[in-house]
Image 1: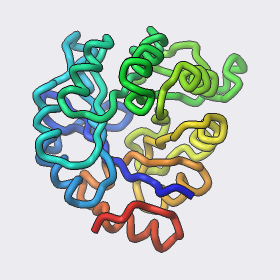
Image 2 (image 1 turned 135 degrees about the vertical axis):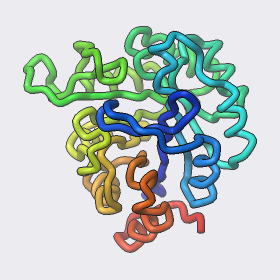
Image 3 (image 1 turned 90 degrees about the vertical axis):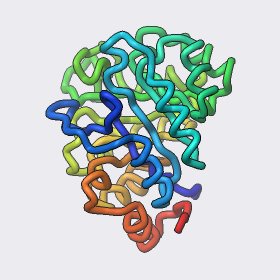
Image 4 (image 1 turned 180 degrees about the vertical axis):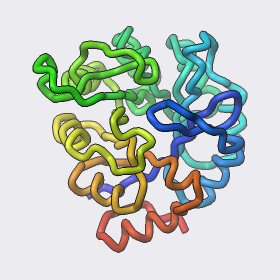
Length: 258
């Protein structure tokens, strides 16, 4: 079994890391560059940054922040938000990021995935998806894709979208459960397992991490290749080392870094 990855997520707004529940009631937590250094030194495997207001404000991603992060950490990181074109992807990668995450853009223009994969390699293109649970029979998977920070439903079935994105050339899929986001009550295991067992590319679980046990569950029952965490470490309740120690005790293969 391949080693599992732990990926802290830094949602950035107005040059500050922020966190809320289902994108609501956000509070500021600190400087993204300082937090990136702390988590990198603390043993995380990768980082992900989302400029959460760039698209809504009609501006490009904060490229200077990307450059500053690239100067001070030595682990891979991906960025998303405010990316609208192939040229935007190129700027982000030139600034030092290893991966570019697309979400709403990919739904509205799926060919951006294939264009990005051809230009930079599939390993650089990450699909972010925000599925919400639904009982509507129009969605065989039981989940509908949302965009624009959960504000807009798309009519896309989550599993069908994952399979289409894989065919277009995306290298990884982040499955961020709308229902679990920020709740710290655990990942949506069935959703993650469904996607992970249906595609042949890495699946990253996101939304709901509150304890190390939740990560153990999503890596074993959920079959995730990596897990995004935020609140549980932003609050200082857990360190990355503590989380990895518990994963090791549970027999989950991880990349040690301490």
